[in-house]
Length: 369
Image (tube, rainbow, N blue to C red; front, side):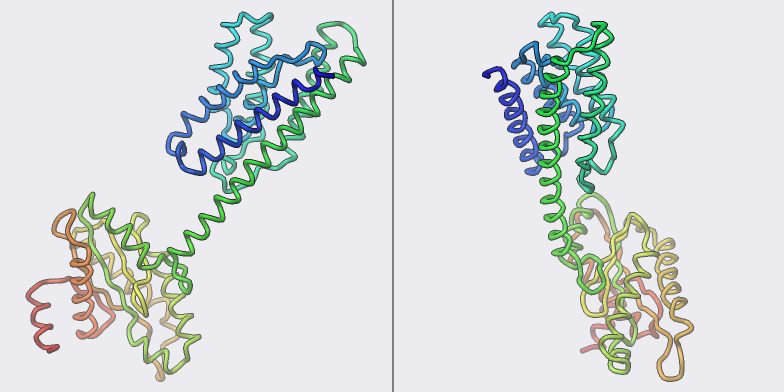
């Protein structure tokens, strides 16, 4: 009876190791080097399984293949193959009987088989690993082992099949539990990510909020020169008063969608507040920035051209632009300069962009007071 406790002990050990690995990953202790550490930890888990050999009657040497199955299923073939290096080396050190055959059957074959079921979204955590994959893999393993045994011995033994069936039940249950643990950890990670996105996202426009923008802009300004655009919807208060707040909210969403579509891929746009948006760009050449801002103005004006009428003029935006003189310049200063440039655009006819120049801003400040 005690021999039946050995595979259970091995399974419990493997579940514990998997729990530790998932917690380490959730704490982001290994995520940045996961492509290297995943094969290392998987290989070590396989070696630990090799330290607990099973009775010969069960038809399996040990549970070394289970960590490899998980590696192939979750990370794909390259990681799964790398995961076999350590246990293969350990097998040679032990000088196991039929060493090459054991490596091929219990390490290389599991790596190849499980990788056929791999999906890149399993690695990222955005998609749960289906339990059916575990059932399919274990069923194929059971069939292959029975056929291999029958081929090597030239006979079919019911006793061997019964013992192998017991071990396959242990393997299947453990494999499914490992998959469930990984899926549960991924669900927690996705929930945390969703909460973080909500905290950094404007609820109305679904653009990033100012808090998120400031953090990203500060990091960008430490590395390179940038430019800031302050963008304001022209006559928004008048639009809001005439059509109501619901239509005003919809206009904000529509403008946000247009900006999201036309902003360059490497740039970052957020809602600043009210009817204002803010954009940080890696573009600092005034000529290309002018074309960029002109394109944004034309995109908004063109999108609402059919809606203009005698009651309400065409919907447009005004833009103020400030270019950082050097990396690590004060972000709030650049935003303030872009805001002053926006003030000039608004008071110079709207539906246009203006670059910040100190002399012009000083003049407007004086006029304002």
